Length: 168
Image (cartoon, rainbow, N blue to C red; front, top):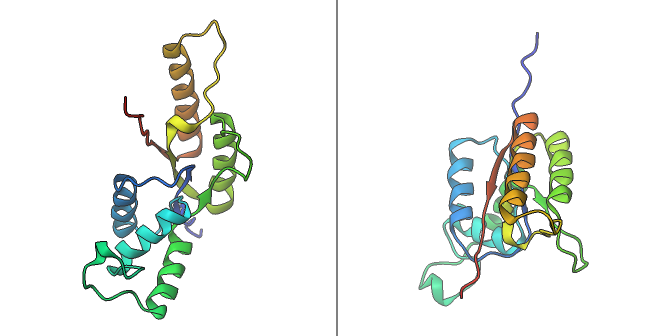
């Protein structure tokens, strides 16, 4: 009997061009340790991940000091790596915030279509969190976490939340 191929990794919903390095660092660490992992991202994350993978800056920029910029060949190799490692789930062009249910529906499709094994929701606080007036915030969060936990268990999929609380 042929051994079934393992899932390819992590897809994610990255609804915002986050400037935080933690999700990128996690993605890079996991993809380096497991070549079959896939992640989700947006364009701004793509540039940063490509720079980390190639270990050269994309632009001649102040942050790059005098380090040589990546070549066209390195860029093309990096794009292939990105395509093999990451899968994008993101909201459409409209200004509507995605709901948790919408995220899970797209994540379910990504799990089935791309055999991904993880979901990064970034940022969690920019999802549509409309709750019934008779439901407390604690009850709502409990309900959402239960829904996410069931999704993760049913689909054998890790889920990470990244929240960017607003400064007061």
